Image (cartoon, rainbow, N blue to C red):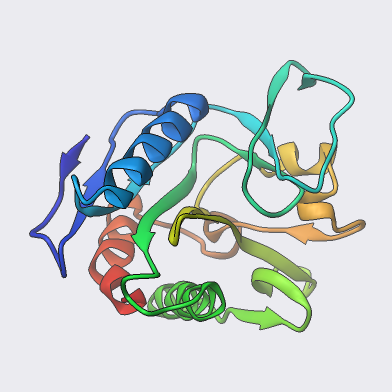
Length: 214
């Protein structure tokens, strides 16, 4: 992990080039949140990818510890069940919204606008759907398909966990679940929509626009 650019309003922007184990990421965020609450470390935004894993939120109870040998990790974020893995970009936030005099609704709104803007730079029209969290677009068959998901938690006025954007991941992993609790829903990725993609370009777009959230 390293700092990828200068601090912005005392926020450190971090990037991991190798896959980060999900449990390790959770431990890092919880420790960082504790330091932020005590004023010992700056807020942070972290870009990374995970090995293949299913994660569940507070409102979902899993009766097994794996799906087709892919482990399930129960976490404290919002939302139900989803998949993370290679080819899906994760952006985790560790931000003191209390000190920033912000609220979770406003923060979520800014994240959604950020995702839509980034996808627009890739000539992908994306949008919100009423009553649903996340960002959607049209897949090749014209279906409304989810391309980005959000799952956040607040502790002591500090928001953490974050968002995922499907870049060129294996979408078959979503077919084994009801993604985010939505039955018969479609999931897509940038690579499924675009004829060719350059991951470095996508990373640059995501990184340069991240300050829009703040």
